Each structure stands twice: as C-alpha cells, then as structure tokens.
Image (cartoon, rainbow over all chains, first blue to last red):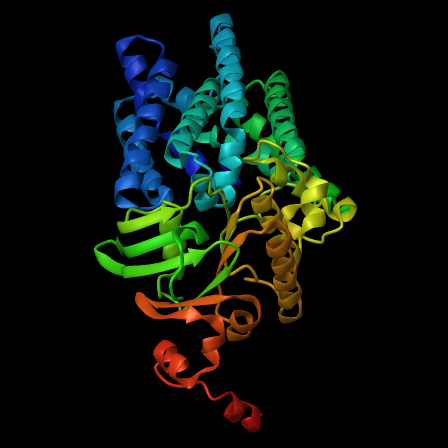
Length: 236
Length: 234
C-alpha cells in the first residue's frame, strides 16, 4: 500500500471491519470472521465502484470507512467497543493463533504469485497491460491480501490501530532498502518484531491494551531506520 | 509513401478512430509502416499521439482496422513511469515480465556500464540513464518493433542526441522498426524516415525530409516555422 501511494487507504480500510465485528458479538459467532467478511466485501465493492466511476480509491475508502465506523459504533455492545477498537491479547485463543498463521502463509504464497505483476503495474499500468497482465484482477487479489493481513491483525491491535501493520513496517523497510528483495524481507521482519515486542510489553504495562504498544514499538523501529538511512545513505 | 508491397509493411492502419468518454481523440487515421524504418509521430499536446500508441498496443477500445505483420513482437517504452518511490534495483526491474534475462547484455546494448548501474535503485538514476534502462527492458525479448513514447522525456538537452544515435544503431544492427513520438523537428529530420503529423486526424504523412518544406510545415502547424527569423532575433 505504501508503494501504491495508498498508505492511508490501507489504514482507513481497516476501520471498515467494525460493523462485522459488531455483528459477530451480537449474534454470538467469531467476530473476526464478521470483520474479515465486511473487509473483503467492502474491498470488492470499492474496487468495482472505482473501476466504473474512476473516483479515487482514497475518496471511496474515505466514504465507506466513515460509514462503517458510524454503523459499528451504533451497533457494537459498549463493553466490546474498546476491545474492537484497540485489541486485546487476553482473548486470543490457540485457534486464533493457528488461523492467523495459516492466513499469513496463504497471504505470503499469494503475494509471491502476483508479486512481479503488481510491481510492473505500479511502475506503469500500460506496460503491465502490454505484457498481457490483467491489472484489474491483480489489484483485486492484492486488495484481498490487504484484507487478510488487516483481519489477522485486528484481534491483537484493534481495528483503529491495525492500519499500522500496513504502513509502518513498510516505510521503515523502505528507509533501508535499495532493492525489492530487501524491502520485502525487512517489511515482514519489522512487522513481526513490532508485534512481538508490543505484546511482550503488555506484561510491564498491564493496564494498556497491546495495540498502542505494538504501534510504539513499530514507530521506534521506524525512527531508528531514519537515523540509519541518514548516516549510511542506504537507499542512495 | 507511394506503392509498397504487403511484404514490406509491418503495420497497416486504416480508418482507426478512438473515443474516450465520448470525446473523439483520433478520427479515421490511416497509415502504413514499412519494416526496418523509423516513423516519427509529431503533434501538439492532446493531439492523440500517446492514445495512438495505446490503441496500437490494444490497450484501448478502437474502431477501424489495424494489422500487424505476422510474428511481430512489440517492445514498448511509455512516456511516464512511476519509479521514484519504489525501492527496485535495475537488476530486479530488468527481470520483471521477462522469460529470459541477461541484464548485463541488455545494459551494454543501450551503452550503460552494467557494473556501475545494475544494483542502483531505479528511482535515483538520471533521466538519461532511466530512459536507457527502459529501452533495455523493452529490448530484452528481442522485439522487431519498438514503440517509443517520447523516449527522451525528462532527459536534459545534451543527453537527448546520444539516445537517438544509440537507437539508430540498434535499429540498424537488429533490423527493427521504430515508431517514435517526439516534439522535436530536428529529431524527425535526423533520425526518422517517415513522419506522421497528428492533430486528432492526420495533418501530414510522408517522408521526414519533407518537413523542411514550408507547405509541409503549414500543413502541420498552420503556419510556417521561420527558422532563419528565430536565429536572427537571437
């Protein structure tokens, strides 16, 4: 999303999960399945409306996320609202962890499939189409992957802060990467380090939900990469 | 262009029209391109030059007929690419979308020093280096036609001529056909065989040397370009 210049789109899209989470809580099924369903349905709808109207992704996501946030806040039970917005480590069961691991593996494998097509389309859509790449389908699969990553992260860091996972590890990696290989690897590594260190910090800051701590860890890494880049000129 | 046998033609376009959002962009364009020649496409901004390329690549819906010769393989260099924010190296870029790739060979072809440039980020290259890398990318699959949309876009004045000299050399050694969008009359005269002047419809189509004629310039620009007057005023 950072390379597509849609960092804030990724962030805003994550908030669309809130009504799905609310329906899960109200109807007693796993709220994160509801969140993922809402995210993906919204992503497909935005992708389709963008194709037929040519209105920018930013504007469409902006409209749908504010609507989703409004609906979610109205229907979600007050007790679960804070947990849905900021995440909670206490309710993460072993099955959640297994599901998140499987979803992450699927996301990595699918990313490998579309990786080169996506990069070429980012450089020039015309070039990609002239090479026979279906840019619209590639973008749809890409949006699906974004929704998978966001849905996986919601449980721990919440729908309000999960956009962090889409943005901060990527911009930190960009500071240290002269090529796509290093950028891809470092983005994943920084995401994992931020998540683990943020969760571990909850044992010191017991009253603070994990979401903000994960964000603080990630921003610290980002700040360090800025200094490293400035000193070593790694991206020049 | 006179009588040309079909065997010599690599592209035949007749009555090609393109509309975008119900606005006519190209209106019944007809021309041919001979194998191994360079066709320069000239015209003001908004004349439909890039749209013509996109139609020739089947990237846009269009009306009319367009026929490439059998076994035509096209290499395309677009006018604009977004590389400044993408941390991709020259080596990685040259391998994208290509079945076979020898990046060193591709860069030598466009007269770039592979050892110096291969691991550089695409976004930090000079304008001239970037255009040469894009041309190298287009050449990797051994195309027999190159579509170049303003191949010196973003290149400083002194670096333009060497790029056209290089392209002329590649055209001769590889026997490829070049379709080239440009705004520069000097480039038309020096490096192209035929000229297609566009302004939604064709305003001139013939040998490039004819651009020196006042009547040709009137057809293209509406009034003659008085080179002598400009020089004397300077």
